[in-house]
Image (cartoon, rainbow, N blue to C red; front, side, top):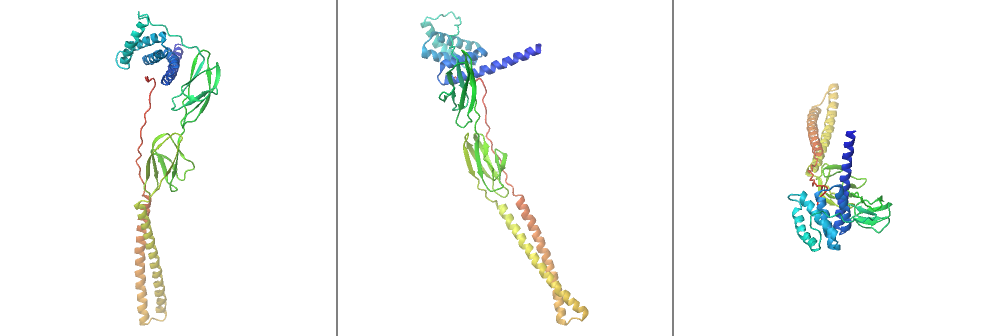
Length: 378
């Protein structure tokens, strides 16, 4: 039972921290948009769930900006208390100097307006009890609509009736998303929507059989049946094919963009040399064939005269012809052997030149970095 209680406590703490983070992000976006009232409401809920120094400072900033707008004393008192809470928690560094500077400006204002200066923390100003839905998204350029309202940039806050409401969120280069947001009576409910980015589509045109890689990862061979998908950003494209100079290019693509690359592959000198060597091997083989035919012809003539020599004898002229045929047969046989050997050597050399002509590419991949949570943005 004790272990179960510990697990439940940890789960509750994790839920509170995640919820506090969402309200903090909502408050940050509302602050950046100049909606300080919504920023205050969101950050108060975040601070209640996770009373951290950085949230206290951000909340104080929102109260200070709202006081400039409406000049309501409770907000000014709350800003002073929150700046002091931040200073109490952060002994050095951080935004301590900013907090001290703001206190030096705001405390005289409190004294001028007749506020109590006994150091007693002022109560939290009354927060609006309106039933509201707020759409939050870290997707750049996101626009949202709630319950069919006109689309507007996020953060978008609308006062609605309690219950479910249709939410539509879209952004350039991202897949739109539709979902339901549940509004609770008298509360600000934050709906965080991070849209999925559309991949860029890369079409590569090259000779059939060429291998394509992006950032050193094989992605297929030409002809491609469909464009290759790539995340937005910089990539290293390589198109390689045996016997051809590699085609490489650094590409920078945007979300949802389409890019066509014409990879003109050029044959290497080694590949051209292999064709010449193989052609030479063919010529030598043909020469060997001709020599073989001539050797067979000389052998046939010698065999005819040899038959006559055995049966009736040869004249002196026929004897000279017989000996000449034997000499030519030996010469042509030797020539054939030399030519066939040369053809074999040239053929093997040409094949090796052809097969070993493989391009090499060293990809260059640019690393990317990601941020963390709970940053002090204002």
